[in-house]
Length: 100
Image (cartoon, rainbow, N blue to C red; front, side, top):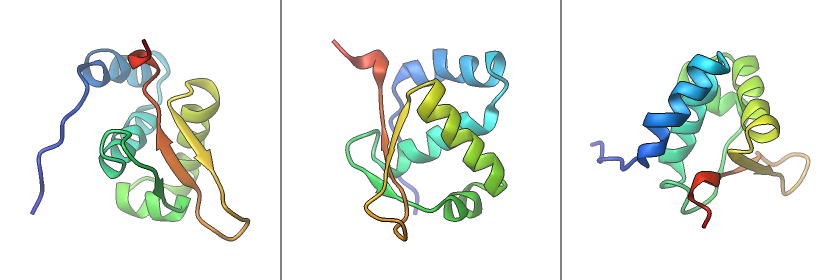
């Protein structure tokens, strides 16, 4: 059974247009939404492999890899850390627009 998801209005009003229209990276928007759900809107961290994300979203592994790179390096919308070389990356959703 699915549960309702609360989205910050910024995600739909601004971020979607920026990533899909301006940056031409709809896959990055999809990955951000997927991570938003998995982290309860940035309230916790979530570990997942690139292959796992690809399987769950229907994207190719290379699209996921490029999207994660876009969201971390260029946009700074997610943070990625690793506990070790054989552990899956741990993702944190960032909300730079909400900083006060």
